[in-house]
Image 1: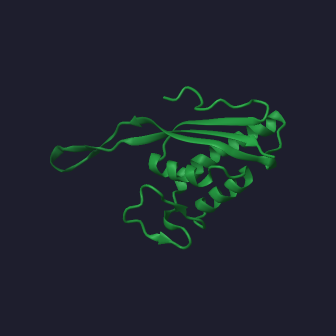
Image 2: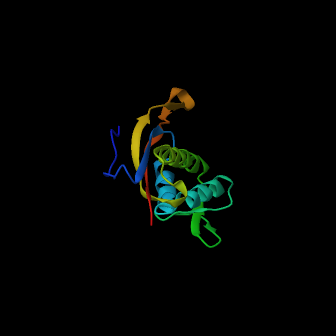
Image 3: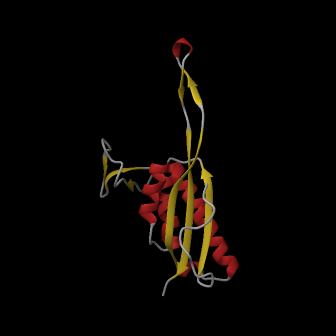
Length: 149
């Protein structure tokens, strides 16, 4: 389990948020995080909302075998669950920045990190009294936004 943040940030110009053990696919969470890394906060929120509405595909850079191409993106999909989870953590970081008195419209994502969380064990009954593992993977999300000039 993640106890803190991966980078040290200046508390006067940055705001942070963590999402621990969110029930999301680590692969899709990594791809969505890569899509919005470095974006301004408002642009990233709009992009994530477009993914949730299935208007904008997420380009799959790493896990893209047998994935159909989307117009202007290449191999891509619409990972709605991962986008909702990351949008929630990003909104939390924006709220933290607003609470600190920072200008959210002038902030960008400086760090977005995805790491695997605990695996919640489960099983699925099969024929002849057998069972297979049906585990739930979780993800730890970290977002740090900072003011840009």
